[in-house]
Length: 173
Image 1: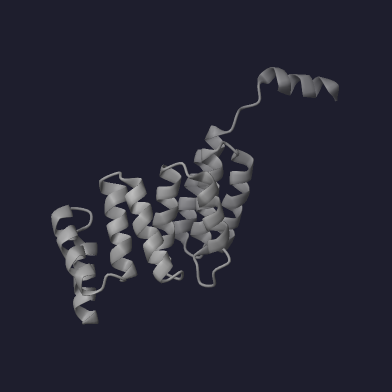
Image 2: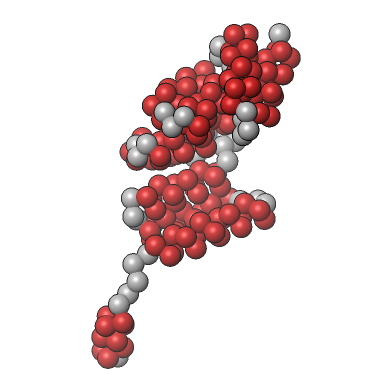
């Protein structure tokens, strides 16, 4: 029975970006075989979050998957994204802090998401400290490039010091 579920989940993954009807059909089959399949629940959450913009429904599917298996790492990034999109800042902060304690979780992604959280609430300097931590835990060049792009975006949002303030400081010396 496990191979049927996997086949349907694989079909759902394959068609996710271009054929929502096939994705939903495959997910319905997968969940009819096993309604506790965390990958299928995660994909269903992604459909609701990324395609239908129904964040509360997506959050429900992600929470269900995590209740089944807290080590379902495929859920973490997508759950964090939807919490950020839904502006559930306290909940996302708590979840990231928890996820960072879970052995085997991708610390680089989690620290990067913490940086995005801090960026969204306009705590840019703190965001840059989490960018540094994300880079420390990243182990491939492609992801490090992504981190560097995030860093530049955050730096671009930081308030600029006015020329008056700069000249005032230089006059004091």
